[in-house]
Image 1: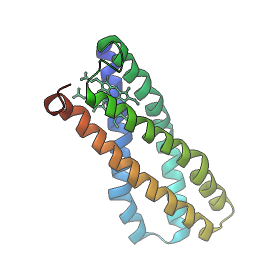
Image 2 (image 1 turned 90 degrees about the vertical axis):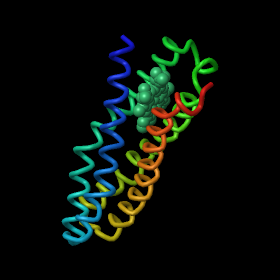
Image 3 (image 1 turned 90 degrees about the horizontal axis):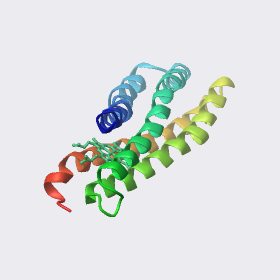
Length: 155
Ligand code: HEM
């Protein structure tokens, strides 16, 4: 069970954080330089509609498998390494930020694109861009702490 849990945990982190990295670092500048607002905003809605189902799976699997390991391997948070406690705290922040993106600016972006309101859509996309930048940075930090923690933060 623990082997399955850590594999699902890592695959979820790779898919979520890797997807944000690709969207923010690669697709965002390419779309900004090649597409006009109507095509750009429509492309982002189509991109998010395909990416977010994978993020939903990740935001469920990360805490489920993470807490499974916390309790089965480390017998609770108080006896788990510091790196796991930090991962858990930052992981919750990341999940809350994602829920906010999904239910607030993303929904408004979809509505604006449906109504061909490119100014309103652009504002929502700018909000999503900032939140994704924060979540991508947190994700990279969490991965660094999770993997280096056992060598650096000993208890
Ligand atoms: C939401 C609450 C989370 C909990 C309770 C949690 C818990 C855990 C636990 C217990 C381990 C095993 C540690 C070990 O065996 O030494 C682990 C590993 C890991 N977690 Fe999390 N985690 C959470 C969220 C996240 C998130 C959001 C990410 C990435 C964005 C992440 C990335 C990783 C990675 C990369 C490892 C592998 C570390 C290694 O074995 O080298 N975790 N996590």
